Length: 112
Image (tube, rainbow, N blue to C red; front, side, top):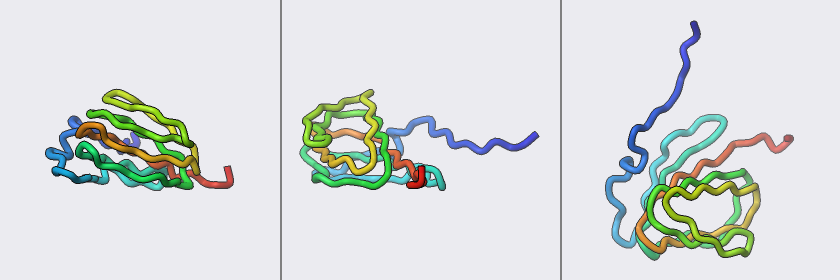
């Protein structure tokens, strides 16, 4: 029988034990040919200014509360929120409170 490779992280949020005061912390969780998963910890008030990425992305908010701008539209995300962003969507993020989220960038073939 073929061996199945997998990754199990029992406490994802625990990979960032402490969010630095007035800072942003990141930790790559998995990086494969298909996707890259990065855990972020933001202190209150920290932000990512508006930008775009050429790949689709998924965000799963683990803790805290965040203000988002997605294609010019204001949204709010908190623990348990999940977001899919298509390629090239202009987006920004600001932490209302200290929090963590998992970002998954899908490494898609642009040919379809």
